Length: 333
Image (cartoon, rainbow, N blue to C red; front, side, top):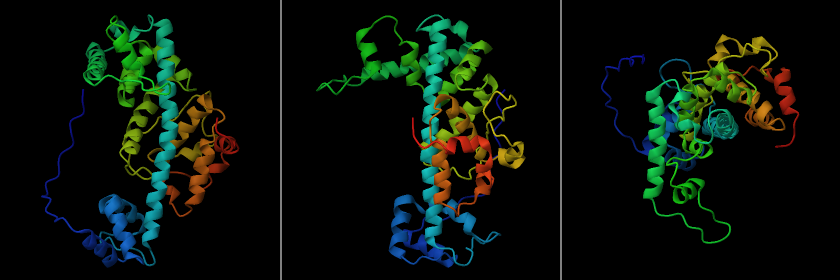
């Protein structure tokens, strides 16, 4: 049963729209040091005042006045914004690898044990017939949209039609594409829904095992990754955002995880740290030579003033052998 929505607020929004000059004036009035006003105006126009506003909060005095602490400069705020942008790019890089690995593992396993390339059309593989029907409708609409567009053409030997275009314009039966094409048409949210709806636990377990985890972690972590990926794709604030959904903490010692249990206390479980740890855990299996954790280390080193506590990252995080192994690798696979 779906959870009922939380109640709406009762106030009326009546704040007027302000010009960029007025918004920069507001920063100055609140005590932010802006040596180069033209530069601050340019960023206010390009990035948006209200996109930058959340990054000013760590530099404000406690209370509701929004006054900045003495000595805080515009570049302090901008550095935090730049850090968050670099963090999103780093996280989306890991998410891409994980997402691609899940797609590949799902179609490889199900195509071999679940009835061939078009296993996904058979409702017997799914728990909820309605959700399975939604999946089929989504893929059918994608195929119809592809045929509604102009034909993809190749003008030289380096240009190729998409695989979906090739299938639809070459084959008439089966109507819908095989598994390895189908999974490429899905968003990560739709992929998550498909895996959750698989009828057999053994199938979910097989997909999870290819990532070095179990089926419980697969469902939990994928649900979290849907949220994180949406934030990254929409250029949202990531470093200290309340995700609302967090990855389950492994119980099995077979799962690559932190050696020190204190590194993941209750407070940190509600931050970004377990997401970063879960990504590195999977990368250890699917991309063992990756230097992703080294790049995370270097990113934090380049921005020493970022409050690690807001991310849930312990000050001594690199002392845990879980991270030391990864950060000692120097090359990308």
